[in-house]
Amino acid sequence: MNELITLVMFALDNQKYALHLSAVETIIRAVEFTPLPKAPKIVNGIVNFHGKIIPVFNIRKRFNLPVKETNLNDRLIIAHTSKRMVVLIVDSVSNVISKSKEEIINATKILPEIKYVEGILKLKEGIILKISSPNG
Image 1: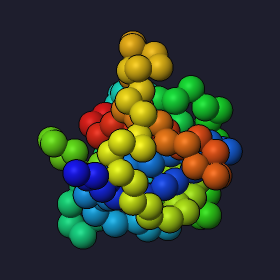
Image 2: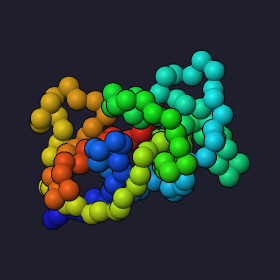
Image 3: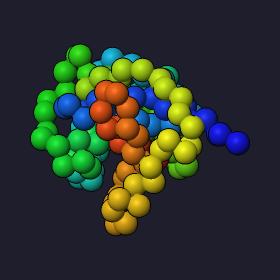
């Protein structure tokens, strides 16, 4: 049986990433967020989303990408983790794709100690890194 996995594709610089659609609450344009003193380096601050205060994660830091200022063209992915809702700052969101589980290469088969990436897809557009749940 070919189990289909539905993913939201997004970009950071020129690299494409994907996140389970089931983890995504919504995607919005970048908004101003409130800095949070002494927060971990990956946390840029907090936002008020429909009355809920949610931490904003700059996952560029997690993937060792150059830091850039958030601008109005960026997108915010509001996602669920097992513990809480989070906001991920991304450059753009391109589309939603469905792939069979067999088409996704387990990242630990390529590098056993890899963190934050759970799978790799080979598409016409290039290599897509499927990230693990954004649990901070």
